[in-house]
Length: 509
Ligand code: BES
Ligand code: ZN
Ligand code: ZN
Image 1: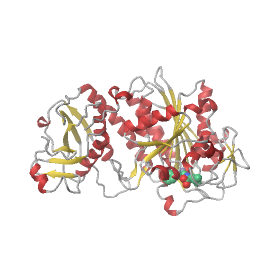
Image 2 (image 1 turned 90 degrees about the vertical axis):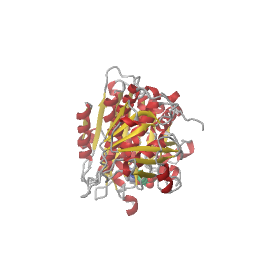
Image 3 (image 1 turned 60 degrees about the vertical axis):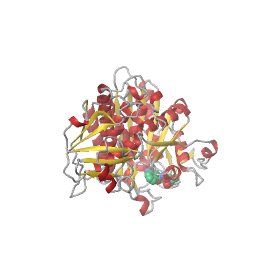
Image 4 (image 1 turned 135 degrees about the vertical axis):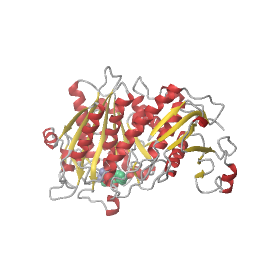
């Protein structure tokens, strides 16, 4: 789907249909030209959020307010209305709120591009979105707001496309079934991403993991028929303003291992590679956005299975940094894979003679995070308040839901082990998302302690009942937040007009 901006009034654009957002039930707006028809259909008071007026070829979509996220949701409803219908081209006005114009146009694009996504690889009969192009007119919804600067709009469109392509790439990888997207094939995807985007790509195999004594990662992978991979992508522009490391949990399947998951809980566990997929996807967007920061994307990819050689509760594992871990539950495997990836990443930077400015990891780490925050919100954890706030702020601006889960010394004590340096699970029932992150923090060196932030995406990564502009399946959680956050380190911001100080353009009504 192509989205373009034209510095022309709506009337000058000739397309198959026009999309009109009815903001806050404002049927008196001059865009609403089919008031009689809408009244007859009971549109504004009825259940349906969309109403197509045949006489004018206008699709009316309810939109609560001129808020970026409402715009995303309305745009998604609009494109999905046309699914299976013979409309190929659409037009829409600029819905600006007087604040950052690039932000609103990006939100509109995100609604169209992310909302129209569908994964139909395994369907014999496909029903893809047929819309080929959408033209955004410079004509504004609020006439008092003067039309947007064309250059800023074009830049916002390019950025939005790069971000949405990345989100959809993450979705594609996660949605692939677990028998197809085995670790070697995730590595194949990484190589492809690297080739297409001029990134450096190193794939480490099982032999390397053994040489590096990554005993925790190896144990998780051991019962799988498919050997693990450690993926390392690098984006290295000249004179980088910062050096950042991203790390992703990539369980291509999490059966729970010998601490086997109940049948109902195992379904959707192909999504346990969402963190790694997000990292690969984020890396794919960086060259397109031209951020002047060096970014290392590291993904620990393997499968948690059962078998005669499976790792067991009671085993003691030795991680790359020499720390011993008592396994009390093989379903708490993500933290074991990440522990070794954390060691790998920090050792790598040290060997290369630099210290990362920040380390961020992405993981579908705990069911407890979903219990704590619900299915729509990611958990943000770490030792550095400013860093957590930066990520939360980035999430808000990017349109993803995230909330902090705070550490405390009492929860930390629950990871004590009688037989090893640390236990892989907490001894108490509650606070599982935080204790999981506290476990991870044990594999961050003292010098990097304040530079690390963790994002538990277990809730939003996989959508079982479509919401907002997220259809069923993978959502690409974390990608938009991370890109927004990374842009903060770059001098070349994604959208200069969206600098943090201007990011809250909400108007009081
Ligand atoms: N991959 C799961 C976490 C998960 C749960 C992701 C639901 C997405 C949706 C993780 O490996 C896991 O199983 N964690 C256990 C930890 C427990 C054994 C301490 C959990 O959350 O139950
Ligand atoms: Zn698990
Ligand atoms: Zn898992």
